[in-house]
Length: 110
Ligand SMILES: [Zn+2]
Ligand SMILES: [Zn+2]
Image 1 (spheres, rainbow, N blue to C red):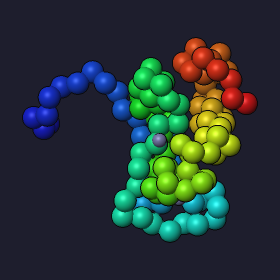
Image 2 (tube, rainbow, N blue to C red):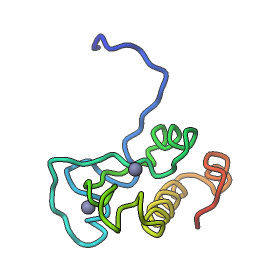
Image 3 (cartoon, rainbow, N blue to C red):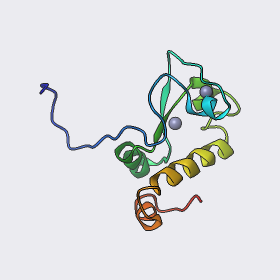
Image 4 (cartoon, rainbow, N blue to C red):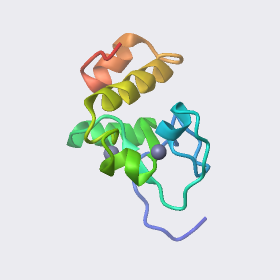
């Protein structure tokens, strides 16, 4: 065991994406390039939903362009933001019910 401070916060790895240097949106475009710098994106935002995203693995790795800087970046492009939310909900509902998703996030994206 390491000596790090104990924390009650749960962290799940992404339920959408294996952390292997790829960018999730690049993959959706068929580009499996690996990046040195990736940003962790929390698929559902707002302080409560960001924490839930961390706990439930509603996260994915994005290249800086797809995260913040290009026109297709999730934080500048509502369609790409919604696309990731639909994918996260679909993944979650492979092992949970719609009611469980709604209880967590409060909105249905599908
Ligand atoms: Zn990318
Ligand atoms: Zn983000």
